[in-house]
Structure formats: C-alpha cells, structure tokens
Image 1 (tube, rainbow, N blue to C red):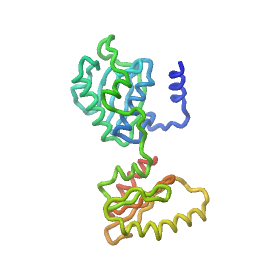
Image 2 (tube, rainbow, N blue to C red):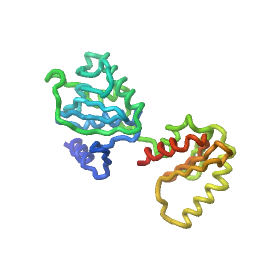
Image 3 (cartoon, helix red, strand yellow):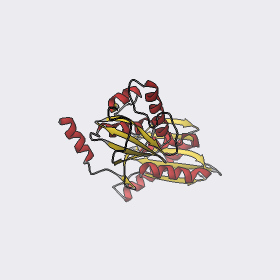
Image 4 (cartoon, rainbow, N blue to C red):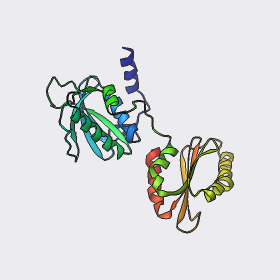
Length: 253
C-alpha cells in the first residue's frame, strides 16, 4: 500500500509538462529516456496501451500489472519484436524488444506518454515482464537522471565545437579542443558581463544562451550558455548558430 500511495502521489504531481496532450516524461533519450519508459510501466497497474512519443516515432506498448506484455506497434518501423508477447522463455524476442527500444531512445531528444484503452494483444495468459525485470535484462538504471541543461547541451553538440570550457560554481571542470582564446574571453569579458547583470538585476532570469558571431575571427562564433551554477563557452562555425540555438531551446523548454 505504501508503494502504491507513493506512485499515485507521483502521478498527481502538479509540475508536469504536456505537449499536444501527451505528458513529457524525459527531455533526453538514451538511458534516461528508456528508464523513464520503464518507470511508466512500473506505475501502471490496470491494463492500458501506453503510447510513447519517442522523438518523432510513436510506440504503442501493452502494459498491465506493472509489466510489459509486448510492443503492439511502432510507427514506420518493422521489427521482429513488434506484435510478439514478451516472456522469459523467449530470450530472442526479449533481446530484440530491448534493442528496438534502446535504438528509439538513442535517437530521441524528448519522450512523452499517453494512456489509451487496451487493444487486443496476444493471449490472456501472457503476463509479460515486470519493469524491474526488464531493467535488469536490458541493463537500465531505473534511477537514471537527465544531465543538467549545460552538460546536456555540450553532450548533444560536441561534434560542432572546435573547443569548449565547462564551468561549475566558478571552477573550470572540463576542457576540450582549443581553449586558450575561450579562457581569455571568459576571464576578461564574460565574468565582467555577469557582474554587470547582477548589478542591474539581483535576481537572474534563469537559463540563457548568448551567441557572438566573429568573436574569434571571421567564420567563427562563440556561444555562452548558463543555467544555475553551470556555464559553458564554446567555439564553433558561424553557420551553426541557428542549429545550436534551436538545440539549446529544445533542452530548456
């Protein structure tokens, strides 16, 4: 009863975000997104079709009694695991289902869920696999948490940066690529800018990113992203400004 009460309280939380009627359960894919999907299975007691929006792909999962009975459909995908009841007696199907869900989550920047009425699937005796059992079989940490916004921005766009610094609570904790000029900009200009901001407005406005085209010469831009006590300064090709700005907005939205 205690576990059920905790799960009901979590479902009733007021700080949830919805997109087009679907509840956002993860702003990351990969292990974090798959862990979020398994947690949704773990809180579903009555039989339901859980429709997950995994990036641009929709996956319908048949769930009951905190167990995944099987993957009913995946939009625009054909896979041996789709339409097959899950059972420990069918390890190949279990492995294929895990590989499919991991592949979907690895390509997703956001995961959402909608609960819909049950649809015919398999046989009535197909109990499926518990969420904790799937986590063990698929090697997923159910407590996986998303990276902070700045670290997520760096991880998502690492291939676009010629160099970057990650600063946490005023200390440089990570460097990559050519950083000499970036360190000078951070020490001599950004810190002065942040002090001026604090003078103008004692309360900061939250996560923000600024881009300066040509800051390190023609064709090279610099981005400064800040959220909480984390910040980064990155050098990249000017032509990437639009894509990186969109990436940052998707992370903090």
